[in-house]
Amino acid sequence: MAIQMAQPDMTTDRYEHEALEALAGAGGIAHTTDLAKLGVRHTALTSLWRKGRLIRLKAGLYQMPEAMPSQHAALVQASYAVPSGVICLVSALDYYGLTDANPEAVWVAVPMGGWMPRVTEPPIQLVHFRTRLYELSTEVQSVDGHDIRIYSREKTLCDCLRLPELVGRDVTLGALRRYLRSPGANVTRLLAIADACRVGRRMTPYVEALVA
Image (cartoon, rainbow, N blue to C red; front, top):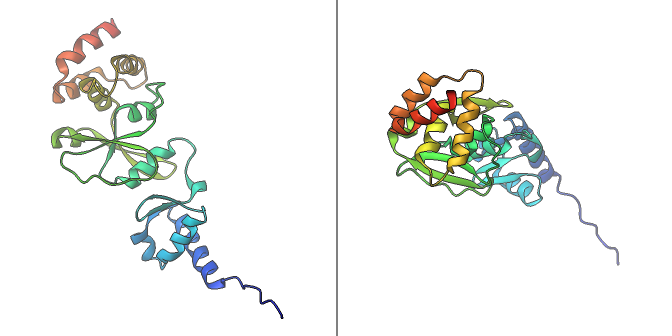
């Protein structure tokens, strides 16, 4: 009795190839809704994920493993996974080179009462900020062509100071020392943002001691 060999599913292969091409064209990371507009089938993405050829950051968000930058890749992933979020606290300090601390999760600020997404990758620590503080001094930085929202250096330092239960005093003071010694340090701007964050009275003595 002749044994019939299973034939490869060429249609599936074509759909998967098209999905990978579309993802590559989108910078290696994209939402299924955006990919669907390009004709990509959701079944192809699911198949690629099950084969280990794609990373699913959360439901409806896929990434090509080889497409991410080696440095700050987790920040890019977090920015896509939490579109309303702003990189903050120790993760922002690390991005700016103001600390040697290596956060195990990406710290992301979201507005108070905002939606809490369920993210698979990377590990994310969400922090609720009141609207006034959430919107204050945000910037957009480009990481290998991917935009991330992150607080300015000055706002990050002020947030670290006002949230000692989340960021240790030694980490905050070490970062402040590096900032004051770095090119572009602006004490006037730092203290103005500290006042806006209502930590001016705490920030001023530290700054005066470190610049003396």
